[in-house]
Length: 180
Image (cartoon, rainbow, N blue to C red):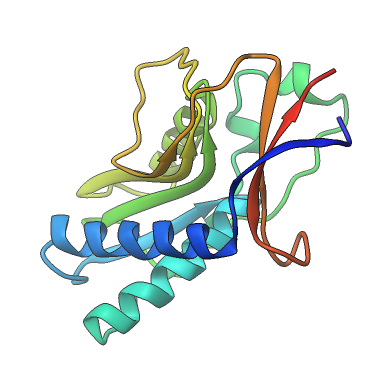
């Protein structure tokens, strides 16, 4: 799986998509009041920070950003790794009564988003929960959809969509790989 089959989005396309998502979030929520952005670890956190920075430029006000680790909430934990890596959730604010936007890099089966909803519920009761994803690649197993989607990409199950973004990589892109 080392060879990139296609670059689905380059740096400029990712930036445009995240800027559009940020505007859509502000429009749907009538501004940034009572809004918070929570990235799903790992790459969702980087995307959440970019969206929050965009909203700050649009609205002139800071939106709190958090990070949510969903490892123990996954229904496939035993399948993913015998020794899962647990990362800290950082929610330096209360979600109670807020409009929460969960941010993830790729929406696939919906299981990650479902686990994030369970983890979020353990941190309080949000007024609303919305989902923003950079890429929706289809193949849903649960009735979950993105409220804000950067790009819809039809894929086969034998393909993998990878979001490359700092600090994990030294460039920003969305790439398509074959599993084999």
